[in-house]
Image 1 (cartoon, rainbow, N blue to C red):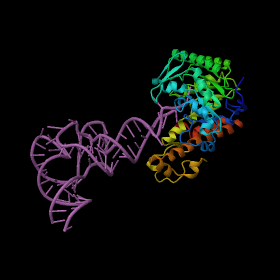
Image 2 (cartoon, rainbow, N blue to C red; image 1 turned 90 degrees about the vertical axis):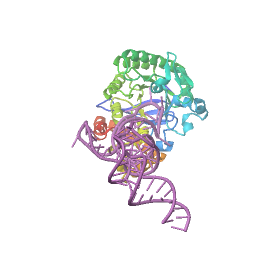
Image 3 (cartoon, rainbow, N blue to C red; image 1 turned 90 degrees about the horizontal axis):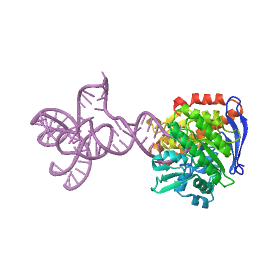
Amino acid sequence: MGAKGFYLEILHVDKNCGARYGILHTPHGDVEVPMFMPVGTLATVKTLSPEELKSIGSGVVLANTYHLHLRPGEDIVQKAGGVQKFMNYDGPMLTDSGGFQVFSLAEKRKITEEGVTFKSHLNGYTIKFTPESVIGIEEKIGADIAMSFDECIPYPVSYEYAKKSTERTIRWAKRGLDAHKKEDQALFGIVQGGEFEDLRKECVEKLVAMDFDGYSIGGTSIGEPKDVCFKMIDYAVKYLPQDKPRYLMGVGSLDYILEGIARGVDMMDCVLPTRIARHGTLMTHEGRINIRKEMYKEDFTPLDKECDCYCCKNYTKAYLRHLYVSNESFGARLMSIHNLRFLISIVEGAREAIKEDRFLEYKDEILRKYGDKRGF
RNA sequence: GGGAGGGUAGCGAAGUGGCUAAACGCGGUUGACUGUAAAUCAAUUCCUUCGGGUUCGGCAGUUCGAAUCUGCCCCCUCCCA
C-alpha cells in the first residue's frame, strides 16, 4: 500500500515513444508530469523566494537530507513544522537521501554494509548515515517524497564494483523501506547498476518487488558519455512498472531532459540551471549566453526575447551584465529565474506535445534549434 | 622662483644590476559546471609565420649583462613662495 494522498495518474502516453503525460498527486497538491524540479538543497533554491519559484511554474522542489542534517539539523526543521513550512514553500517537496554525497564527497566518507561514515565538510565531525537513520531524518524533514539511501556509483567503474555496490544499495533499500513509517510521505527506491544491463535489470526487479511509491534512476549524469546515460535510462525504464512515477536523477541540460522524457521518465531535477545562472551562463532560445562578455555592455535588449519570465520581461542584457560584473546578488537571482523558467517552459511544451502524440517532433525541433551543438 | 616625490603591460601596483616578458589585483578573452563542499573553478592576456622579436617616459652612457646605475631632456603630483 502506497503513501497516503500520493499516486501518479497517467493521462496519456505518446503513440510514437515512451513519453507520458500525467498528474502526480501529492499531499501538497497536484502537479503535472513530465516535470523539471528545481534543487533547493538547503531548503532554499539559491537566491529565489518561494513566490518566484511559483511564478516560474515550479512543481516539486528538492531539498537534501545530508545538508539539512548538518545544518540546521532535522529536529529544527521538524519543530518548524516540516520543510515546507520552514521555507514557506507550499508546493510538493522531495528530499534526496545523501546518496549523491556518497559520490560527490567520496574523499570524506567510508562505506560499509551498515552504512556510510562521513567527515562533515563543515567542521570535520564524523556523521554516520545508515539506510534507517536516513529515513528517520527524511521523516523529520517531512517532504512529500523521500529517497532511499543509496550509493551513487561513479563512472567509469568495474563490473565487479558496480555489482557489489548495487546489491548493497538493494539491501539498503529494503532496510529503508522497513524503517519508513510516515504515512503521508512517499518513498522511492533508487535504481543503480552502472552501465550494465543485467545489474540495472536485477536492481529494478528487486526494488519493484518491494513495491516502492516510485522509482528513481540514479548514477546518471556524473560524467559518463551521453549514449551511456541514455542506455542506463533504457535499461531501467524497460523493467519499471507503468503506474509508478519514474524520476531521472540529476539531469538538467535540454538533451538529457528531452531524451529522458522520450524514454518515459516523469521527473527530473538538476542544479545546472541555477548553478550556471549564478556563474553568468544562460540558456536561451538563441543558444548559450555568457553574460559577462563585454559585447553585452551596451546591449539593451532582453536576455531572451521569447521568454516570458520576470527577468526577460523587465531587464536588459546590459543591466544583467552590470549586476554580474559588480557581483550583485540580484543578478544571480534574475538569471536563476530565467534559466529555471527556460527549462520549465520547454518541459511545459513537452507536455502539450505528448498530449498530441507529437513529442518526438517536438524534441527534435527543440534539440535542433537550441540543444546540443549550441551547448546546453 | 624654491623644495619634495613620481613616470613599469588596458588600469592600479610590485620589482631597484643577471633567476624578469616583468609578482599581484582589477579589467579583457576562452572554457567548465548536471540527485549543490560551487555567487565557483580553470586557462589565457606585449607582438609573432612560434624560429624569434620589441619592452618598463625619451635620448645618450656605464657594464659581460640594465626596468634597476650615471647624465641630459620631457611630463605629472604635492608643498612653500
